Length: 201
Image 1 (cartoon, one colour):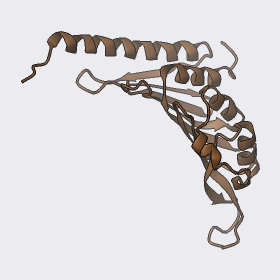
Image 2 (image 1 turned 60 degrees about the vertical axis):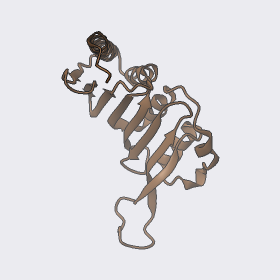
Image 3 (image 1 turned 30 degrees about the vertical axis):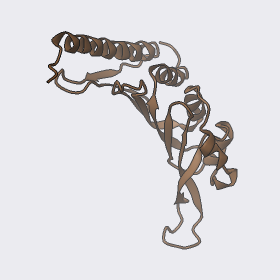
Image 4 (image 1 turned 135 degrees about the horizontal axis):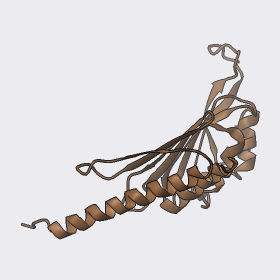
């Protein structure tokens, strides 16, 4: 029978505390320079470790979550009502190469609507069309109802999976964007890319 090592468990607790503090400090530092006051929530000592940082700026809200996965890609980030113009900048900040297998099936003709086609052009084949919705004002039940691409997704080779929902077909659309399985460096780059569009305070 193997007995737990109290010293090892103590070191693990200290390491988790340091990680919690580092993630929260990084988020607060990046966002405070733009006048955004984030809210930090941490796991209890009896739970598996996690930390959540939430923030709001204008209509856009965000959630940065870290599960401290052993493989190092336990970070995720979600933006709600993110302006369309910011999506390419945020995705590019991941800094990785798009997955080759998914890129092989990329077809620009799959994208319907100005917003989806523009995103495809700006992201160099990273995203694929996942789902579509009827254009606003058209009968959803009619067989010939025109549609637009409402959901897109993509993945990178080493880390990162993105899922994006568009609110509408044209360039006034806003997005709900979630990026999963990121490293600490990548999520820092993503949140910095978002914050850079906001004038410093």
